[in-house]
Image 1 (spheres, rainbow, N blue to C red):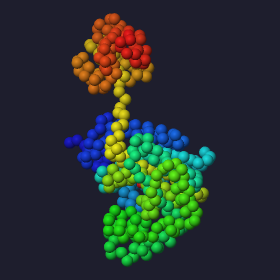
Image 2: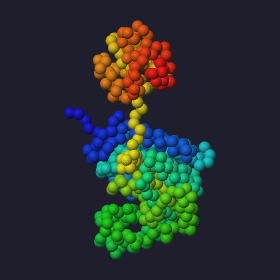
Image 3: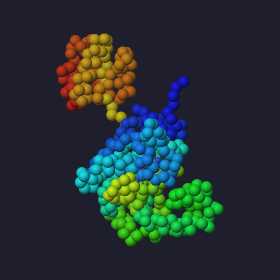
Image 4: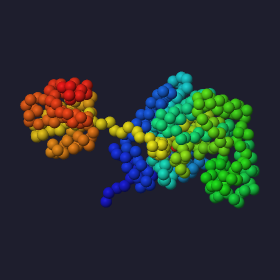
Length: 435
Ligand code: HAM
């Protein structure tokens, strides 16, 4: 018997493959490329990286994300060991706020602009674009309620997709206002839905009781029709909230970031206040959200801070980003190829090659060799498979002459290069003809 990976998780391999659901799983080099691009964008926007543990206290997530959310109700991978309740983090915002408070990051001065890349875990029903272990990159800008932070967060998010050549995205934005006005909205919303109570699904009826705003998230067409004339959050928020929202929209226009207002956009996590947003791609089908986020001015206090820490952020799913890359037919650079493959003939040559490989690697070259004692033919085949720029052939004659036979794999030309100038030759990538 052999083992299989757990459903809803997947391996990232040196080569691309197709999973059971027919989705292409990108090779590790493409993941690296995307991560490098994310880091590059983050650095342009002057963000610092933060890395928090995969394991967090369950209570942090329950309180931070919210007891009534789907995540806390049914999607946490949580367990108890000894006296501690652990959860595999389902998202990274609550952990980042925990770390901010625990290490007094406000003492670094100014606004804290943080980003992260890493795995998250949710016990959802796996399907295309939805996994139990998935990967997020995200940003949290902490310590400012300035509308520029909201606009910058959104600009960073869209900049990543732009940098990767994904253009068929649409951005929806909304404002939830402050929680103190939300009760009023919820009352109006519940009143509005009252006459339709019998037409609502089980899920929506349950949400109406526990977490009414989530009813707006329904995917059922007949419910969407009912909701078409539902009261809008924007009509209930304070003048300051409206002014903040107007500033965010103005700044997005200044940055040429296109958006659509969606007065019914609510998000699946409880901590949001004021601005919320979601980036979607038509190409993704049912799981259309590439990324989402918003402002969460109260979360620090919910997690025990005496002082408010106004903040805004987003997180993006990497798996969905790859689906969007595929849909846009974007080809990413593959793995770095070997500079040189060294083929050895005979035991003495093998020892020389093994030692010399080390020297070439110390000099910074990407060197491949055979670790199996195969024939020259098999080694040349391997050099081809590895797409090496050059192949060195070392046998008895070469050892005697202290010269390597060097084959330029593109032109097929061969030349003899003295052992002592090998590094120089390979580093300068001189063409074989020039020797
Ligand atoms: P979220 O909307 O729950 O927000 O997740 C952000 C993104 O993670 C989604 O848009 C989606 O691309 C991806 N994602 C979520 N669940 C899965 C899954 N099961 N499989 C694959 N991808 C998934 C948050 O997590 C917030 N922390 C965002 C935020 C940061 N708000 C403020 N700061």
